[in-house]
Length: 141
Image 1 (cartoon, rainbow, N blue to C red):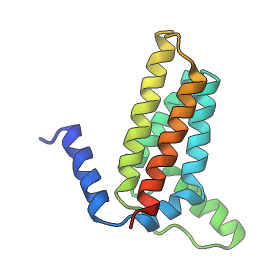
Image 2 (cartoon, rainbow, N blue to C red; image 1 turned 135 degrees about the vertical axis):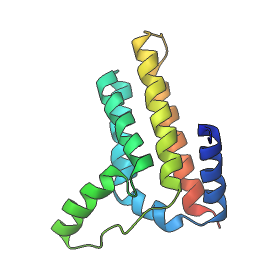
Image 3 (cartoon, rainbow, N blue to C red; image 1 turned 90 degrees about the vertical axis):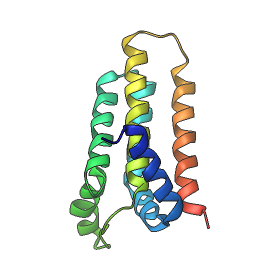
Image 4 (tube, helix red, strand yellow; image 1 turned 90 degrees about the horizontal axis):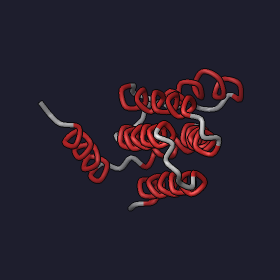
């Protein structure tokens, strides 16, 4: 049986070998900005329920062929404005979703344990890591 580490590593290697630039371009349209904003709101408001919901959304992003927000985009925004739908996503979706789920659960644990840290800095760190990983997949040659 493969461990979580093996699964993530194999997806990361696949991300490095197979260009997912188009997949990230789809995510930048709607899914990533909305998801990042919800996680930031959950951290800044110190709301564990919002963070648990984001962890569940990230889990669905790992398991489903599209990010849950991609389905909203396809069924709502694309039809409303008559723009093209997102046909599919690459393995970067699973990597980013796994990192986002892990981060959300760690933030929930910090809130539940009432750890005294600067949650504003934690939110900034999350935003910077998210933008960095998006940039890695989007701008690599």
